[in-house]
Amino acid sequence: MYRQRRYPSVGLAVLAMLVAVLARPAFAEEAPAPAAKADEAPTTAAPAAPAPEAAAVFSPPVPAEAVAKVVYHADFADPRRFSAMLTSINNMVTTYQNDLRDYDVRIVFVSHGIRFVTEDKLAGTPFAEDAALKQRRADLLARLASLRDAQNVKLELCGITKESVKLADDKIIAGVTVVPSGVVRLAELQHQGFAYLKIE
Image 1 (cartoon, rainbow, N blue to C red):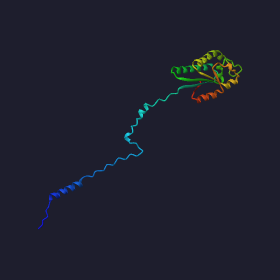
Image 2: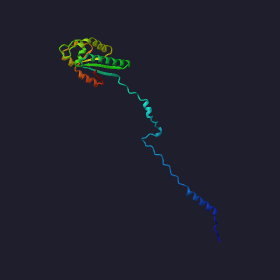
Image 3: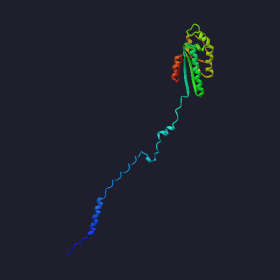
């Protein structure tokens, strides 16, 4: 009679292998890295952007205004007030010179200010010489001439005021430029960046 032979050891070994395979944990597949787009450069080749602080250190400084521009308005009759204005202008331009800074300082004479740019007494006009001006005229004219010649302060006279008193050109001190309108000139200079000052 035929007997089937058994192989218990082999059957157990196969069973153990199946159990081991089934019991092994599944590993999650790693997601592939996204492909770079055709129009994008590889990120590894791009240099790192500088920090904002580093960029600020090497930024060029903002230059200051190259020329200091100031215009004084002289439309008053008081010699003491005019004297104070001359002192203010002298102090200003001296400071600019000490700082080695270029400047453009001007005086625009309007109305009663015409008294200070002529030696004419302007008799019979609203701007006629009085005792206070007569006493101080020589000193004021000398100081004004010094600002004009030594400090390069520019002098401009309102043409409307000049014509109103029929003052001849040869009666005006040297170095004065006559402009069509004093107030228009003041507005033009302020539009050009001039600081406006008036002594009170």
